Length: 228
Length: 233
Image (tube, rainbow over all chains, first blue to last red; front, side):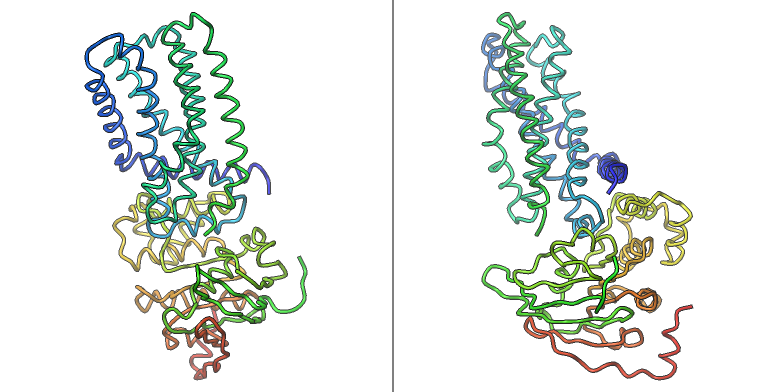
């Protein structure tokens, strides 16, 4: 089994998922609307005090990313389940982990695209200093999203054959995401606050470790969870 | 990989879902070059048996060999030469007919070749709909497209689960021609159906499944015309 063949399969899944999404835009519009609405609701809940908002901004940002991302993962496997396409997908020759990698990349692209609009919107709403260290912030968003999407794609596959998958997915996913949430929120808060104590790098290292461990674990275990 | 013996051999295959035993010890041998009708009442285990043979389900107990590959350990190798058309067409609504075939070719590790897609779309009668999204297709058209996906890469083991559902007579003929072609090329075709009359012109052997156990059936008697019709041009 050559890696070129597997890479071609990965690209085919990314192309298929993103093409379907580009044509319907149903998921993108819903997720984006939900994310912006959540930002507004947090804003109302916290009130007009600038200090309170500044202290909570990183947490709000990441919780919004997590909540809106869950909608993405459910949809990712729904299109395979509609019309029984998952069986056909599993019967193609080749490594099944290529399916996982393809789904992961498609979901990551989608989540990052939503963030491309949501994060500036959060910056405007909460008056966040996004331009203070844009590259560092982008790195944290990318690393946090990679870990989040890896686990989201994995658990969505696990829950895909269960009737109550919409409920089950966040129940499975969110507890495992606690270390990632901690690392992402702390590093984002450090960057937005100017990183005077130099804390961001420590938390970024935690994100890297989290990503590596869970990416490897999900790649190994995917074959087992996708089977009926 | 060279092998001796039957193309498909199952020994004591059982499958349980929770407390319910759906397959209760299936023993079966099928020689290469045969087309088989698998008959049985609703809930008798036809679909589960096909899903076990296809490697989509692992047997709870028992095992078997398909063209020399172990049913469980050799599942990745078996998927290299298997074709399965289940109850659902398994096509993507937001892709066009041609894009569905393109995706299928890429997933099967084949290079994208528009001429192959055109040939298959012509064969299944969907050439005029090649650029139409399959969301608007009728059930019969969707199944034709699903069959086209198999035609792109003719399998050695063809599994068809109720393939005549939603098909008109030309569609039924298409299914039968395909199954016969696979058998005559030295493969095996297994057609699970309630309707032996439709499968009769194409099958060599009939097996019944009842309450998770196989019972050998009577071979269909064919008229000379039906024998002649088996010859795939």
